[in-house]
Image 1 (cartoon, rainbow, N blue to C red):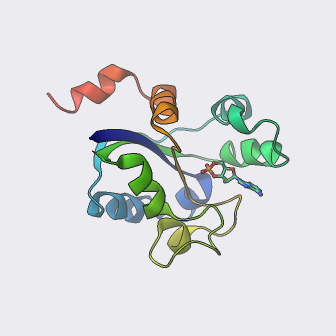
Image 2 (tube, protein in one colour):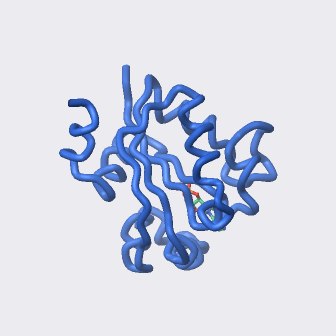
Length: 142
Ligand code: CMP
C-alpha cells in the first residue's frame, strides 16, 4: 500500500549545502516527491512540531536547533514509505547509523542529524499537514 511520509532536511544539512545530494538519495531509493519547500521555523513553531518530545531533556535544544536556519520539508510517497524512509535515513545517532544511510553520510551528531522522518502513518499525516495544504499535494498529480 502506498504511504506518505514527511522528511525535513534540517538546518545543519542546509548549511552544508547538501540539499540536492539528499533529495537525489531519496528519489534514487524510489520515493516520489509530492511537494518540497524551503522555509524557516520560529522557536515556537519548532516547539509545536516537536510537541510530542516536550517532556524530553533535549526538547529546548531541539527546538532552538530546528529554528536556527532554513529547513527543507518534503512530502514523500512510496509503498511502505514510513519504514523504508527510516531505514534510508538510519539511526538517530549518526555514529550508530548504517553505512550508506543519509545520517551516516551527512549528519554530525544525535542532535544535528541532518534529516527527520515521520515515525508512523498517523504522525506523517499530521506532519505533512503542518507544512503543506492538501491542495498543494494533489496539484502535483493533475
Ligand atoms: P528526529 O527524527 O527529527 O526526531 C526527534 C529528534 O530529537 C531527533 O530526530 C533528534 O534530532 C533529536 N534528539 C533525539 N535524541 C536527542 C538527544 N539525546 N540530544 C539532542 N537531540 C536529540
